[in-house]
Image (cartoon, rainbow, N blue to C red):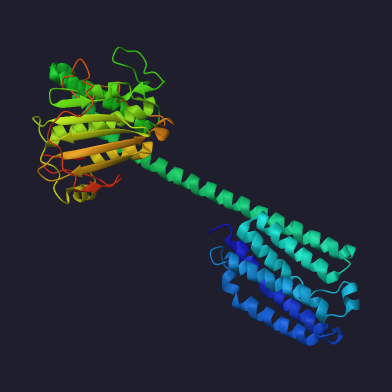
Length: 437
């Protein structure tokens, strides 16, 4: 239950009770009024308004600003009308206004709805009306006005504090639920995935050769996964020679050069493309995920082309292949199957960076993955990673060319026809021969 709900219930009861009280005062003073008929009409309107709007003061959603304005206008009208209805002698002696203490309920509605600032505004309007009605205010009148003003502001402040506390509590409950789910997943991962990775690492070390490289990669992923499920930072990334990765901007072209091989061509500008280390690492990892899809589903004989472009306001990386492309409907099917390769490894990374990723393909004509990262976003850096730095671990076992070719254009090769674009954030997959999660 919301912490505001008791306040709204109390306000509803207050309006009904004070309306009855105001009517009782009017009936009691009827014979002393100068013009009782206009006062009777107003009291009838006040009663109808109070009971007709009971539903408006049940919660904050139904208590709209328009209702508050009209409600305050009803209260102020009654205060000002008192000068016409009541006798001057009674007014000077401090007699109640027509709405009496019902007016405070209108001010309290502003306080509960909008906090202390709204309460101060409504109380000031009522105070001004009271001063106009009294003419020359007495000390008692000023005392009552100050009391209403302070009480309204205090209640408004309490409402704001209660709302902030409710938000904090909701956030704490979310964190608790997330922690419990993390612990459950950690148990499952420890009992299954980590055991398999550890076994692959041991078998790879024992077998030697290419299997040793596979074991090394499995060991790195085991360390990263343990760091992820435990919530502790992974070891600081290091370069291949053992030196730490610098915190200053790094050349994205240098990171992408690691993917170059006999079947992967990398083309980049002749000048460095500096990016924040975290952003550059994530972008390079997204490119690696796209190349993994090409290798796994377009076959080892498929060719891929990586084009790095340094635009004035963004960095654009395009990965194209000459595979069979993505069949119609395959992306939606991958989303239903829960496959997260393209959705998280590619689109998820770019989305977290503040960029975008698009997959364009036609069945039988290859696939193109376009990664765009605004420079204004990349300069802000990335949150702390809990896995291995993509710039430090060999992203794939393919051979690496000794030097990065830097022509001005992408080498001529089969180009995917773009007839379908999948928005970033949608799970993507690929049929046989195309990228898959």
